[in-house]
Length: 76
Image (cartoon, rainbow, N blue to C red; front, side):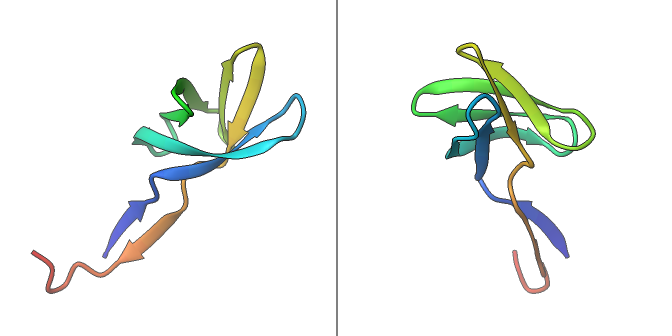
């Protein structure tokens, strides 16, 4: 069994509660990741509950990408 993570997540702007799907890069579970909205890159750090980042004078949060468990048996 192996856990894999989506390459997108839902990002929430805490200033206005707007949500948007963002691309995820360099994801490190319960540590940090980068997210991309359009061509803008935001560094997100895990605070024990959610990932938090700041950009453009706004704060953004996300629970992170969803994970899926797959069976590696027979995979090469």
